[in-house]
Length: 216
Image (cartoon, rainbow, N blue to C red; front, side, top):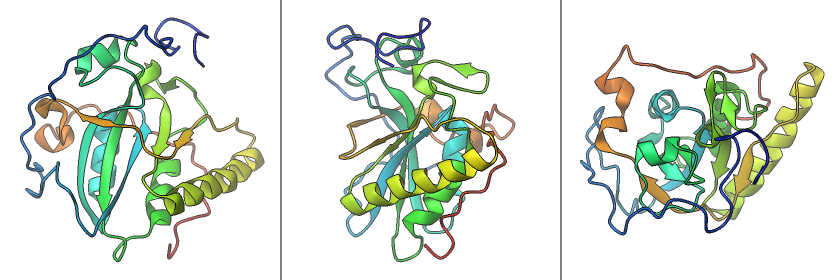
């Protein structure tokens, strides 16, 4: 969708994004729910990134899954280094709002995470999610391993078949390997719905069940 569509629904052309900054944004490196680190080497664990609209509700969904060790929200898939939330919302960075999900593969399979992803939003909407419109709300899976990537591709095919049966549209989700760089968002956005339980959550699925994840 590069260069196509209404303002904020098209990605900036290469070299046209905001310049950003050299230094990362400050980060309080403790999860508001359980206190585990947001940034670490996560030795012995696996991780990947999901974008499925506003990252507040998406992060809460994933931190609630048994076997997920920690989560963090940030920006990924664009050009601007170390962007701010305001810059990302301008549509001039190319980033989407993403959740980094760190999990223990011995406790939760990738299929469980993929099932939650597909069922937790509508992956057919392009540069939007419900009333949230813009490139930062596009659907993505950023993989850090080949096995994750193959599983994600297979799950997309399986879910598309179910969407077809329901008379719904084509999936627009970007599935990328290797994962692009993840820039941690400002502290105020980390675990936002734990800090503000009554805050906005834009998650809304299609009502279609994804045939992956059971025992995976």
